[in-house]
Length: 410
Ligand code: ZN
Ligand code: ZN
Image (cartoon, rainbow, N blue to C red; front, side, top):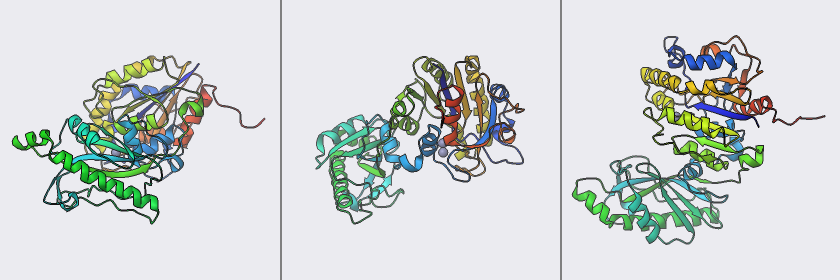
């Protein structure tokens, strides 16, 4: 059975600065080779001019309409931490933070949204799970550093509720409010507020925080919630395509997208999602995963971060390192494997945010109609045979190339 490898370099593309982009001037012989042996084009992952999030873009690239299946970042981050999120669950992103003041948690002020960048919250999470009692089931999981996820599971819940995280230092913790007048939203807000009070009491008196205070560290004494979303029913990748999906990514968000669609997340040691990630290990894992899975999504994150930092040279340098690391991908047997090499959106260093500018895409497979494009860049890709496509087209094009596409009509 033929297979698909989709390589997504997050935020890879740029708007030009003095006519140049990090990608266009980087030394990247392997990416250029991919362009030369493939068919090229530019791609709007959602639609022209729409600024994609990484989550919505990845859903679209996997062939899932994000307008239908995206329900906020909470469920995806929760899935990314390893929680088996189910339809009807209300999921939140979690920050362990530091609050100070007297009285109820809602009278206290957030002095740090990251609790002094606490690195290990295992014991605190355990204490909260043990001590908090709610009218519904809840699942709390730590993520990396001060991050984590919370899921409420039960009947008649709603995600039409506000954050408790004020999103800035010096502000009071927010009481969770219903955003509509439904009983479900009122009830969910009450549960959340009860969780906030109870978890704060437990954390405030936890010995680990006493120890932190003694060492002059900030206490991790509040769990701040944001991004509530209710997970819809999402057909699994296997149901949809009859293919087994593997995801190799360093960030919980992309792992979460993979888990939401029922894929296997392959953990790679040292895959951090930043520029010091284990590039070679991830590439090797992807090549191996092609032996056990029909579709492998290989994601690299640092280009996006460097775009957000506005770091032109750093982005160029990372692209060059990545290019060396992907060398083994050119050894793949392209009569068996279809490789798509692309980005999820542009994160121009000039803008420091995701933009709607289309991204370059190259598709490699034996027998593909190669074109005149010899370099992988924003300025070359549009001359290729794919012209301008949308994110949802990528999956169809690959399925067609590997003869897994069913005929439409007689
Ligand atoms: Zn992204
Ligand atoms: Zn980004």
